[in-house]
Image (tube, rainbow, N blue to C red; front, side):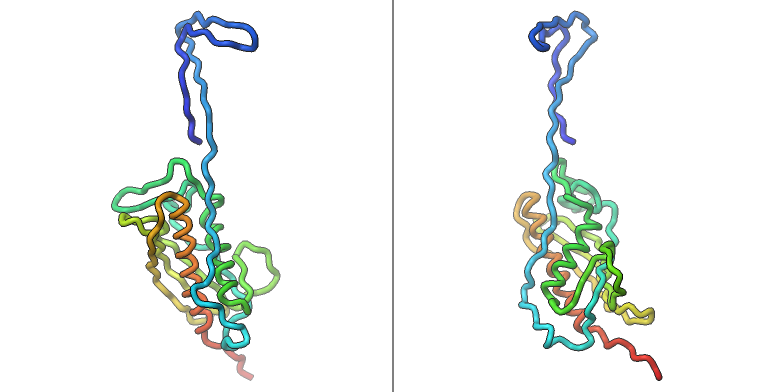
Length: 219
């Protein structure tokens, strides 16, 4: 919480109700403080850069129910205040701008919404969402960087894994380094990071479409 405080020197007169009280003790100091709430920001889903393919034209191997698991995010990023930059040995954290909810909760829900736009024939849900149905596939994400670099670009670095639910399923692993110019200010950074998360969804949707068919049980 940001506080702006002004001190009233000892012996100064101040008004209390309709009376005037004189402070006679030199040891007494009054502090009048005003507080302001931080600005809150949220990541937003973005439209796919390529129009979604009609589900009737997708391979039959594409799973119809996918769970986006909670991402692994270092504590340096998963904090209330927004990390504006992390160049060199310094972490630049905003003194007044905060996330509306933790990144570990925001990212899977926004990614889920992004994926629904890209694969409309598949149902997606985040790990913490209540569902009684067992997913056919999982999307796992390890976020290593999610801020602005020294050149003013928004940067998202992550490890992404996509695989079917069966224990012996082959995993599709990607190491992503995505960046794009970010307009000045916190809102510009959050908008650019949202766009980069949409690019992650572009990659994940391609991986889901390329998954091998489900194994058939031997008779």
